[in-house]
View 1 (cartoon, rainbow, N blue to C red):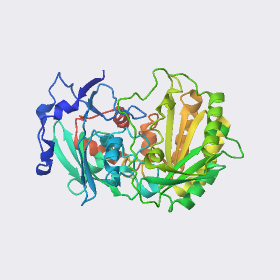
View 2: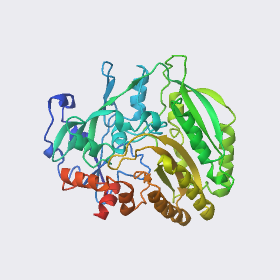
View 3: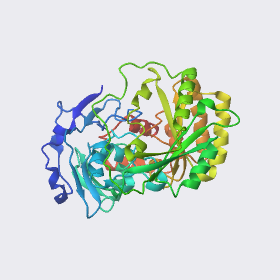
View 4: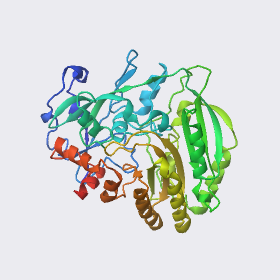
Length: 444
Protein backbone atom coordinates (compact mmCIF):
# COMPACT_ATOMS: atom_id res chain seq x y z
CA UNK A 1 0.00 0.00 0.00
CA UNK A 2 1.30 3.43 -0.92
CA UNK A 3 0.73 6.05 1.74
CA UNK A 4 1.44 9.72 1.13
CA UNK A 5 2.72 12.08 3.80
CA UNK A 6 3.57 15.76 3.57
CA UNK A 7 7.19 16.20 4.57
CA UNK A 8 6.59 19.92 4.99
CA UNK A 9 4.69 19.15 8.19
CA UNK A 10 7.48 16.86 9.35
CA UNK A 11 10.15 19.53 8.97
CA UNK A 12 8.15 22.69 9.58
CA UNK A 13 9.35 23.08 13.19
CA UNK A 14 13.01 23.14 12.12
CA UNK A 15 14.66 26.53 11.70
CA UNK A 16 16.34 25.86 8.37
CA UNK A 17 17.89 29.33 8.38
CA UNK A 18 20.20 28.17 11.22
CA UNK A 19 21.67 25.23 9.32
CA UNK A 20 25.10 26.84 8.96
CA UNK A 21 25.60 26.48 12.71
CA UNK A 22 24.80 22.77 12.98
CA UNK A 23 26.09 19.67 11.25
CA UNK A 24 23.73 17.33 13.07
CA UNK A 25 20.17 17.96 14.20
CA UNK A 26 18.20 15.06 15.74
CA UNK A 27 14.71 14.72 14.30
CA UNK A 28 13.77 11.27 15.60
CA UNK A 29 10.41 12.54 16.85
CA UNK A 30 9.51 14.19 13.55
CA UNK A 31 8.23 10.92 12.06
CA UNK A 32 5.37 9.99 14.47
CA UNK A 33 3.89 6.59 13.71
CA UNK A 34 0.33 6.44 12.47
CA UNK A 35 0.28 10.06 11.25
CA UNK A 36 2.91 10.32 8.57
CA UNK A 37 3.26 6.61 7.88
CA UNK A 38 5.95 4.15 8.85
CA UNK A 39 9.27 3.38 7.14
CA UNK A 40 10.41 2.56 4.61
CA UNK A 41 9.90 6.02 3.11
CA UNK A 42 10.23 7.11 -0.48
CA UNK A 43 10.71 10.73 -1.51
CA UNK A 44 8.54 12.41 -4.13
CA UNK A 45 9.73 15.54 -5.84
CA UNK A 46 7.47 16.87 -8.58
CA UNK A 47 6.29 13.36 -9.51
CA UNK A 48 7.57 13.64 -13.09
CA UNK A 49 9.93 10.65 -13.25
CA UNK A 50 9.23 8.58 -16.35
CA UNK A 51 9.49 5.40 -14.24
CA UNK A 52 7.50 6.67 -11.26
CA UNK A 53 10.70 6.44 -9.26
CA UNK A 54 9.15 7.70 -6.03
CA UNK A 55 6.86 4.67 -5.73
CA UNK A 56 7.88 1.47 -4.03
CA UNK A 57 6.33 -1.64 -2.58
CA UNK A 58 5.14 -0.96 0.96
CA UNK A 59 6.62 2.56 1.16
CA UNK A 60 5.20 5.75 2.64
CA UNK A 61 5.66 8.55 0.11
CA UNK A 62 7.00 11.88 1.44
CA UNK A 63 6.57 15.09 -0.52
CA UNK A 64 8.02 18.50 0.20
CA UNK A 65 5.47 21.18 -0.67
CA UNK A 66 6.00 24.93 -0.69
CA UNK A 67 3.87 27.64 -2.25
CA UNK A 68 6.66 30.22 -1.93
CA UNK A 69 10.06 28.54 -2.33
CA UNK A 70 13.13 29.83 -0.56
CA UNK A 71 15.65 31.20 -3.10
CA UNK A 72 18.59 33.51 -2.36
CA UNK A 73 21.49 34.57 -4.61
CA UNK A 74 25.03 35.30 -3.47
CA UNK A 75 26.64 37.37 -6.22
CA UNK A 76 30.09 37.22 -4.65
CA UNK A 77 30.30 33.42 -4.73
CA UNK A 78 28.01 32.99 -7.76
CA UNK A 79 25.88 30.56 -5.81
CA UNK A 80 22.16 30.23 -5.25
CA UNK A 81 20.63 28.72 -2.13
CA UNK A 82 17.26 27.07 -2.73
CA UNK A 83 14.79 24.82 -1.00
CA UNK A 84 14.76 21.25 -2.26
CA UNK A 85 11.12 21.52 -3.33
CA UNK A 86 11.77 24.50 -5.62
CA UNK A 87 11.26 23.65 -9.26
CA UNK A 88 13.76 24.34 -12.01
CA UNK A 89 11.26 26.82 -13.49
CA UNK A 90 10.99 28.77 -10.24
CA UNK A 91 14.76 28.99 -9.80
CA UNK A 92 15.37 29.83 -13.46
CA UNK A 93 12.79 32.65 -13.42
CA UNK A 94 14.34 34.05 -10.24
CA UNK A 95 17.88 33.98 -11.66
CA UNK A 96 17.30 35.21 -15.19
CA UNK A 97 16.12 38.63 -14.00
CA UNK A 98 19.45 38.98 -12.22
CA UNK A 99 21.59 37.87 -15.16
CA UNK A 100 22.32 34.29 -14.05
CA UNK A 101 21.29 30.80 -15.06
CA UNK A 102 21.71 27.18 -13.96
CA UNK A 103 23.45 24.56 -16.09
CA UNK A 104 22.84 20.86 -16.63
CA UNK A 105 19.07 21.41 -16.58
CA UNK A 106 16.61 18.67 -17.63
CA UNK A 107 14.28 19.17 -20.59
CA UNK A 108 11.26 19.53 -18.30
CA UNK A 109 11.31 22.61 -15.99
CA UNK A 110 8.75 21.23 -13.53
CA UNK A 111 11.35 18.96 -11.87
CA UNK A 112 12.38 19.89 -8.32
CA UNK A 113 15.93 20.82 -7.38
CA UNK A 114 16.00 17.89 -4.96
CA UNK A 115 14.96 15.63 -7.82
CA UNK A 116 17.69 17.04 -10.06
CA UNK A 117 20.28 16.17 -7.41
CA UNK A 118 18.90 12.71 -6.64
CA UNK A 119 18.79 11.88 -10.36
CA UNK A 120 21.93 13.84 -11.28
CA UNK A 121 20.12 14.91 -14.42
CA UNK A 122 21.66 16.31 -17.60
CA UNK A 123 20.60 18.93 -20.13
CA UNK A 124 20.93 19.92 -23.77
CA UNK A 125 24.73 20.05 -23.85
CA UNK A 126 26.37 17.67 -21.42
CA UNK A 127 29.64 18.05 -23.33
CA UNK A 128 29.91 21.67 -22.16
CA UNK A 129 27.94 21.59 -18.89
CA UNK A 130 28.12 18.07 -17.49
CA UNK A 131 25.48 16.71 -15.14
CA UNK A 132 23.55 18.82 -12.65
CA UNK A 133 25.58 17.45 -9.74
CA UNK A 134 28.75 19.08 -11.06
CA UNK A 135 27.56 22.44 -9.72
CA UNK A 136 26.16 21.26 -6.39
CA UNK A 137 28.21 22.81 -3.57
CA UNK A 138 26.30 21.41 -0.60
CA UNK A 139 22.86 20.31 0.53
CA UNK A 140 20.89 19.78 3.72
CA UNK A 141 19.91 16.16 4.20
CA UNK A 142 17.21 15.01 6.65
CA UNK A 143 17.01 11.45 7.95
CA UNK A 144 14.75 10.24 10.79
CA UNK A 145 17.59 8.39 12.54
CA UNK A 146 20.53 10.64 11.63
CA UNK A 147 19.02 14.08 11.92
CA UNK A 148 19.48 17.09 9.67
CA UNK A 149 23.00 17.75 8.44
CA UNK A 150 24.79 19.82 5.85
CA UNK A 151 26.68 17.67 3.36
CA UNK A 152 29.38 18.86 0.96
CA UNK A 153 32.24 17.32 -0.96
CA UNK A 154 34.67 18.67 1.63
CA UNK A 155 32.78 17.64 4.76
CA UNK A 156 31.40 14.22 3.76
CA UNK A 157 32.60 13.10 0.34
CA UNK A 158 31.16 9.57 0.58
CA UNK A 159 27.68 10.68 1.64
CA UNK A 160 27.77 13.45 -0.98
CA UNK A 161 28.49 10.88 -3.71
CA UNK A 162 25.81 8.50 -2.43
CA UNK A 163 23.22 11.30 -2.57
CA UNK A 164 24.05 12.97 -5.90
CA UNK A 165 22.58 10.51 -8.37
CA UNK A 166 21.60 8.25 -5.47
CA UNK A 167 17.85 8.01 -6.24
CA UNK A 168 16.79 9.56 -2.90
CA UNK A 169 18.05 6.67 -0.75
CA UNK A 170 19.99 8.73 1.83
CA UNK A 171 17.17 11.01 3.00
CA UNK A 172 15.23 14.13 2.10
CA UNK A 173 17.11 17.01 0.44
CA UNK A 174 15.55 20.03 2.13
CA UNK A 175 17.88 22.70 0.76
CA UNK A 176 20.84 23.05 -1.61
CA UNK A 177 23.57 25.51 -2.54
CA UNK A 178 24.37 25.45 -6.25
CA UNK A 179 26.85 27.27 -8.47
CA UNK A 180 25.24 29.48 -11.11
CA UNK A 181 26.60 31.04 -14.29
CA UNK A 182 26.46 34.78 -15.13
CA UNK A 183 25.19 35.51 -18.64
CA UNK A 184 24.94 38.67 -20.75
CA UNK A 185 21.93 37.57 -22.79
CA UNK A 186 19.08 35.07 -22.59
CA UNK A 187 18.68 34.92 -26.36
CA UNK A 188 20.08 32.17 -28.56
CA UNK A 189 20.98 32.28 -32.22
CA UNK A 190 19.79 28.94 -33.57
CA UNK A 191 20.91 27.25 -36.78
CA UNK A 192 19.79 23.98 -38.36
CA UNK A 193 21.86 20.98 -39.46
CA UNK A 194 20.31 18.04 -41.34
CA UNK A 195 21.74 14.52 -41.41
CA UNK A 196 20.86 11.28 -43.19
CA UNK A 197 21.93 8.82 -40.47
CA UNK A 198 22.59 8.80 -36.73
CA UNK A 199 26.28 8.15 -37.45
CA UNK A 200 26.44 11.24 -39.67
CA UNK A 201 24.60 13.31 -37.06
CA UNK A 202 27.06 12.18 -34.39
CA UNK A 203 30.05 13.17 -36.53
CA UNK A 204 28.53 16.56 -37.31
CA UNK A 205 27.87 17.26 -33.64
CA UNK A 206 31.45 16.26 -32.80
CA UNK A 207 32.71 18.86 -35.27
CA UNK A 208 30.48 21.58 -33.76
CA UNK A 209 30.90 20.63 -30.09
CA UNK A 210 33.34 23.37 -29.07
CA UNK A 211 31.46 26.23 -30.77
CA UNK A 212 27.93 25.38 -29.58
CA UNK A 213 26.30 26.33 -26.28
CA UNK A 214 23.28 24.01 -26.65
CA UNK A 215 22.24 21.14 -28.92
CA UNK A 216 18.82 19.73 -29.64
CA UNK A 217 18.64 16.72 -31.97
CA UNK A 218 16.00 14.41 -33.43
CA UNK A 219 16.14 11.32 -35.63
CA UNK A 220 13.17 9.72 -37.37
CA UNK A 221 13.35 5.95 -36.88
CA UNK A 222 9.89 5.44 -38.37
CA UNK A 223 11.65 6.07 -41.70
CA UNK A 224 14.48 3.64 -40.95
CA UNK A 225 15.89 1.89 -44.03
CA UNK A 226 19.18 0.25 -45.07
CA UNK A 227 20.07 3.58 -46.71
CA UNK A 228 19.77 5.63 -43.52
CA UNK A 229 17.47 7.50 -41.19
CA UNK A 230 16.83 11.20 -41.56
CA UNK A 231 17.18 13.68 -38.77
CA UNK A 232 18.37 17.11 -37.74
CA UNK A 233 19.82 19.03 -34.85
CA UNK A 234 19.69 22.66 -33.81
CA UNK A 235 22.78 24.53 -32.67
CA UNK A 236 22.07 27.16 -30.03
CA UNK A 237 24.70 29.87 -29.50
CA UNK A 238 24.31 32.82 -27.15
CA UNK A 239 23.40 35.97 -29.06
CA UNK A 240 25.97 38.75 -29.36
CA UNK A 241 23.35 41.40 -28.59
CA UNK A 242 24.24 41.28 -24.88
CA UNK A 243 20.72 41.87 -23.71
CA UNK A 244 18.77 40.23 -20.89
CA UNK A 245 15.20 40.15 -22.13
CA UNK A 246 14.05 38.27 -19.04
CA UNK A 247 11.99 35.62 -20.84
CA UNK A 248 10.47 33.45 -18.13
CA UNK A 249 9.56 29.79 -18.16
CA UNK A 250 5.80 29.45 -18.41
CA UNK A 251 5.06 26.49 -16.21
CA UNK A 252 2.23 25.57 -13.87
CA UNK A 253 3.31 22.78 -11.50
CA UNK A 254 -0.33 22.11 -10.66
CA UNK A 255 -1.15 20.84 -14.14
CA UNK A 256 -1.42 17.12 -14.77
CA UNK A 257 1.25 15.32 -16.76
CA UNK A 258 -1.30 13.33 -18.75
CA UNK A 259 -4.47 14.19 -20.58
CA UNK A 260 -7.73 13.11 -18.90
CA UNK A 261 -7.91 10.31 -21.45
CA UNK A 262 -5.15 8.23 -23.08
CA UNK A 263 -6.04 7.50 -26.69
CA UNK A 264 -3.81 5.04 -28.53
CA UNK A 265 -3.21 7.45 -31.41
CA UNK A 266 0.52 7.03 -32.02
CA UNK A 267 0.19 3.82 -33.99
CA UNK A 268 2.45 3.20 -36.98
CA UNK A 269 0.62 5.00 -39.82
CA UNK A 270 -0.43 8.00 -37.72
CA UNK A 271 2.98 8.58 -36.18
CA UNK A 272 4.69 8.40 -39.56
CA UNK A 273 2.49 11.29 -40.67
CA UNK A 274 3.21 13.16 -37.41
CA UNK A 275 6.96 12.67 -37.84
CA UNK A 276 6.73 13.79 -41.46
CA UNK A 277 5.04 16.99 -40.36
CA UNK A 278 7.50 17.46 -37.49
CA UNK A 279 10.49 17.05 -39.81
CA UNK A 280 9.17 19.44 -42.45
CA UNK A 281 8.01 22.10 -40.00
CA UNK A 282 11.31 22.12 -38.10
CA UNK A 283 13.58 22.11 -41.14
CA UNK A 284 11.74 24.91 -42.92
CA UNK A 285 13.52 27.67 -41.01
CA UNK A 286 17.30 27.38 -41.10
CA UNK A 287 18.06 30.26 -38.70
CA UNK A 288 16.08 31.91 -35.90
CA UNK A 289 16.47 33.71 -32.58
CA UNK A 290 14.75 32.25 -29.50
CA UNK A 291 14.83 32.63 -25.75
CA UNK A 292 16.72 30.11 -23.63
CA UNK A 293 13.57 28.47 -22.18
CA UNK A 294 12.14 27.62 -25.61
CA UNK A 295 15.35 25.80 -26.53
CA UNK A 296 16.44 23.98 -23.38
CA UNK A 297 12.98 22.93 -22.14
CA UNK A 298 11.49 21.13 -25.18
CA UNK A 299 9.23 18.95 -22.97
CA UNK A 300 7.61 21.86 -21.15
CA UNK A 301 4.47 22.11 -23.28
CA UNK A 302 4.48 18.60 -24.76
CA UNK A 303 3.61 16.24 -21.94
CA UNK A 304 0.47 15.34 -23.88
CA UNK A 305 2.83 13.26 -26.02
CA UNK A 306 3.02 10.59 -23.30
CA UNK A 307 -0.76 10.20 -23.36
CA UNK A 308 -0.81 9.25 -27.03
CA UNK A 309 0.29 5.64 -26.48
CA UNK A 310 -2.81 4.48 -24.64
CA UNK A 311 -2.79 2.74 -21.29
CA UNK A 312 0.15 0.48 -22.12
CA UNK A 313 2.46 3.48 -22.50
CA UNK A 314 6.04 3.46 -23.75
CA UNK A 315 9.56 2.56 -22.68
CA UNK A 316 12.45 5.00 -22.84
CA UNK A 317 15.82 3.39 -23.35
CA UNK A 318 18.74 5.79 -22.88
CA UNK A 319 22.25 4.51 -23.32
CA UNK A 320 25.72 6.09 -23.26
CA UNK A 321 28.05 4.65 -25.90
CA UNK A 322 31.83 5.26 -25.56
CA UNK A 323 33.30 7.23 -28.46
CA UNK A 324 35.51 4.37 -29.64
CA UNK A 325 32.49 2.04 -29.84
CA UNK A 326 30.01 4.35 -31.58
CA UNK A 327 30.42 3.03 -35.13
CA UNK A 328 30.23 -0.67 -34.23
CA UNK A 329 27.36 -0.03 -31.81
CA UNK A 330 25.28 1.85 -34.39
CA UNK A 331 25.90 -0.95 -36.90
CA UNK A 332 24.57 -3.56 -34.47
CA UNK A 333 21.68 -1.35 -33.42
CA UNK A 334 20.56 -0.79 -36.99
CA UNK A 335 20.88 -4.48 -37.82
CA UNK A 336 18.53 -5.41 -34.98
CA UNK A 337 16.04 -2.63 -35.71
CA UNK A 338 15.81 -3.58 -39.37
CA UNK A 339 15.35 -7.24 -38.45
CA UNK A 340 12.74 -6.80 -35.69
CA UNK A 341 11.06 -3.55 -36.81
CA UNK A 342 10.02 -2.31 -33.35
CA UNK A 343 7.81 0.74 -33.12
CA UNK A 344 10.08 3.66 -32.14
CA UNK A 345 8.35 6.99 -31.85
CA UNK A 346 11.30 9.21 -31.00
CA UNK A 347 15.10 9.23 -30.97
CA UNK A 348 17.48 11.85 -29.54
CA UNK A 349 21.27 12.24 -29.76
CA UNK A 350 23.53 14.00 -27.25
CA UNK A 351 27.26 14.34 -26.71
CA UNK A 352 28.62 13.52 -23.25
CA UNK A 353 31.91 14.40 -21.59
CA UNK A 354 32.38 13.33 -17.99
CA UNK A 355 33.26 10.51 -15.63
CA UNK A 356 31.00 7.73 -14.37
CA UNK A 357 30.77 7.56 -10.58
CA UNK A 358 28.89 4.81 -8.73
CA UNK A 359 25.51 4.53 -10.53
CA UNK A 360 25.48 8.00 -12.12
CA UNK A 361 24.54 8.12 -15.79
CA UNK A 362 27.65 10.05 -16.74
CA UNK A 363 30.76 9.61 -18.83
CA UNK A 364 32.01 10.41 -22.35
CA UNK A 365 30.50 9.33 -25.64
CA UNK A 366 27.25 9.37 -27.59
CA UNK A 367 24.05 9.42 -25.55
CA UNK A 368 21.23 7.82 -27.50
CA UNK A 369 17.62 7.88 -26.27
CA UNK A 370 14.75 5.98 -27.89
CA UNK A 371 11.05 5.75 -27.06
CA UNK A 372 9.60 2.32 -27.83
CA UNK A 373 6.00 1.22 -27.64
CA UNK A 374 5.51 -1.13 -24.69
CA UNK A 375 4.80 -4.34 -26.59
CA UNK A 376 6.36 -7.79 -26.98
CA UNK A 377 8.48 -6.82 -29.98
CA UNK A 378 10.05 -3.91 -28.10
CA UNK A 379 10.88 -6.07 -25.10
CA UNK A 380 12.62 -8.58 -27.36
CA UNK A 381 14.65 -5.81 -29.00
CA UNK A 382 15.60 -4.28 -25.65
CA UNK A 383 16.77 -7.66 -24.36
CA UNK A 384 19.05 -7.88 -27.38
CA UNK A 385 20.29 -4.33 -26.74
CA UNK A 386 21.16 -5.24 -23.14
CA UNK A 387 23.74 -7.71 -24.47
CA UNK A 388 25.03 -5.30 -27.10
CA UNK A 389 25.36 -2.57 -24.47
CA UNK A 390 27.58 -4.82 -22.35
CA UNK A 391 29.69 -5.87 -25.33
CA UNK A 392 30.35 -2.23 -26.25
CA UNK A 393 31.02 -0.93 -22.75
CA UNK A 394 27.80 1.11 -22.60
CA UNK A 395 25.77 2.09 -19.57
CA UNK A 396 21.96 2.33 -19.43
CA UNK A 397 20.20 5.17 -17.63
CA UNK A 398 18.74 3.39 -14.59
CA UNK A 399 16.07 6.02 -13.96
CA UNK A 400 14.73 5.86 -17.50
CA UNK A 401 14.49 2.11 -18.10
CA UNK A 402 13.01 0.15 -15.17
CA UNK A 403 13.12 -3.07 -17.17
CA UNK A 404 16.88 -3.71 -16.95
CA UNK A 405 17.78 -6.55 -14.59
CA UNK A 406 20.29 -6.10 -11.72
CA UNK A 407 22.80 -8.56 -13.21
CA UNK A 408 22.87 -6.50 -16.43
CA UNK A 409 23.41 -3.24 -14.54
CA UNK A 410 26.15 -4.80 -12.41
CA UNK A 411 28.07 -5.68 -15.58
CA UNK A 412 27.57 -2.18 -16.98
CA UNK A 413 28.42 -0.17 -13.85
CA UNK A 414 31.74 -0.89 -12.16
CA UNK A 415 30.50 1.01 -9.09
CA UNK A 416 27.32 -1.06 -8.66
CA UNK A 417 28.41 -3.08 -5.62
CA UNK A 418 30.23 -0.10 -4.11
CA UNK A 419 27.02 1.93 -4.24
CA UNK A 420 24.93 -0.80 -2.61
CA UNK A 421 27.55 -1.36 0.08
CA UNK A 422 27.75 2.37 0.75
CA UNK A 423 23.97 2.67 1.20
CA UNK A 424 23.88 -0.32 3.59
CA UNK A 425 26.79 1.01 5.63
CA UNK A 426 25.07 4.39 5.89
CA UNK A 427 21.63 2.99 6.72
CA UNK A 428 21.43 -0.74 7.45
CA UNK A 429 17.66 -0.55 7.85
CA UNK A 430 17.24 0.95 4.36
CA UNK A 431 14.87 3.58 5.74
CA UNK A 432 14.46 5.12 2.28
CA UNK A 433 13.44 2.87 -0.59
CA UNK A 434 11.69 3.15 -3.93
CA UNK A 435 10.98 1.12 -7.03
CA UNK A 436 14.55 1.65 -8.25
CA UNK A 437 16.34 0.62 -5.07
CA UNK A 438 14.09 -2.38 -4.55
CA UNK A 439 15.13 -3.54 -8.00
CA UNK A 440 18.83 -2.81 -7.39
CA UNK A 441 18.94 -4.65 -4.07
CA UNK A 442 16.92 -7.58 -5.44
CA UNK A 443 20.12 -9.12 -6.74
CA UNK A 444 21.88 -9.09 -3.36
